[in-house]
Length: 138
Image (cartoon, rainbow, N blue to C red; front, side, top):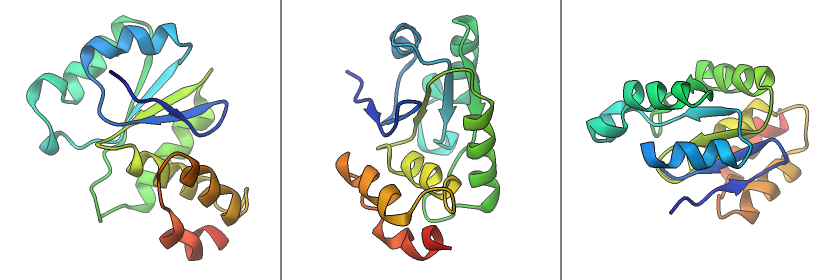
């Protein structure tokens, strides 16, 4: 069963999803899915190519932005921001636990929302982003 956590009206995160979850994601009103999980962490049946094909077949826009744990890049933040900005409706981003998807969301909003708001929003859903405060205050 999916564990969708809506950080905002237009952005939600989730631990790893499966092919069978995509129809429900569409039914819940999401228009875009962002894959923040590198293929090297998961089994072939839910790797990028399979997920993208299934999502696209359902009319979902699928974004590929693998975030390697402990090796987040500025490009990851830029790609996440671009996917969110270009979405025509609510976005669901997934990774192993939802944490990386929360981190790139928060960093993409640095300077547009307060660090307290970003950290507090993620904390409501079990994600501790306090370590990002210096970057979020920037």
